[in-house]
Image: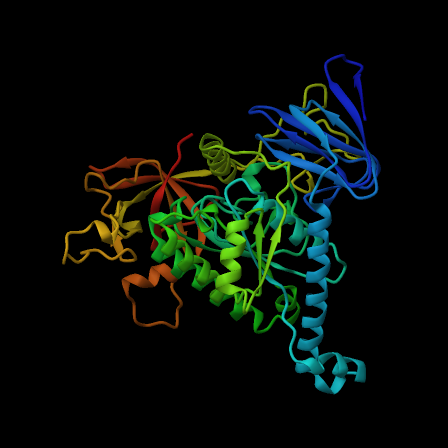
Length: 508
């Protein structure tokens, strides 16, 4: 039930919505608009992250989300775009999954503690451990485009962090078109210790510490990322396979000394191409799904609203993995390619410049907001979310720039009979900025971590296994003087560093 009222100035339109138990308020923002939500009474959450009563939460940049309540609540909404109440939600099914995963985590942690310190184990612990080792939930989420996979990922991760057991599940995103907590084109994994907030599609799964303002602690994730460099998995599936396996190896190395982290498990969000069945990409998608199952040692596959895919996964993995079909939310918005392109621009601009948020008409600006109430943006009460990027000029020789494989790679089936490919899909090719057609102008470059100091031997393919430490954009090329103008979100020398060029471009 909604009650509309105007503010004293007559400019602000606000509504009070009273939500019954197990219903949700859904909203979709238009470009250039923002929305304010305040919980007046009761309890509510957004994608598993609980709202604080009396605080004002801001949403912007075409955000699409939902406020759900288990027990009923009253919320105040300022300046909505598209909005409605839904009484049919799949939240009970998602909550049941969380309960099952919570039991797996508890048993896995007990097993790990008994194995590590058998002398401290009680009789009850040994009895519980008698049936053999119990696995933590390692979940792969599959589904077609616009099925809500990322939302389900966020809900399950947030419920785990709110369970009061100090869980720190690993959130893995292998969708190069998503961006997650870094930029599109990246495959990444990040341990999550506090609920992920929702405010903008530019930070779907939180913000990396390399771009977040330093005082936004909840956004300062430290993801482990590899640069794939393209939005579509079909551009270079062999590279995708290798990077997925690199991620898995790094996670298991980390868990060797982190018992609670290993017991917390992981949840993997995947691209829709993993679920799209066609003669052209079937082999590629099956190989990439298998790479995920192997690398992350998946023991649960969740299939979102796709009967054929569920049967397919049951047939391929049902003997060793639990495959569960789960419902798709009716609130999932059909997102087109133009919307996704705008989100990529939001992500790049936010990475370089931070956030400049204008509250709805009639509400005070961020700087003028009361320190007692204030605004909650991305989980933090803050008044300054902007960054000051650095534009610097470097010599061509300061930065070693590479491209992985040819810029356009014809499929092997398209080659002449008996012909062999000259350049491997995973062969690094050095780029000379002085040559025509380098593709560097307005290009996004991923800056890689330095090679391991203990490795004496160097080889080109080593750069495929180096993680990403940040991103820069080439804003100008001065070929006569052999100089590049680089835009970076923070200060730091690029001399001697290695960068990889993908297919992403950005200009202000």
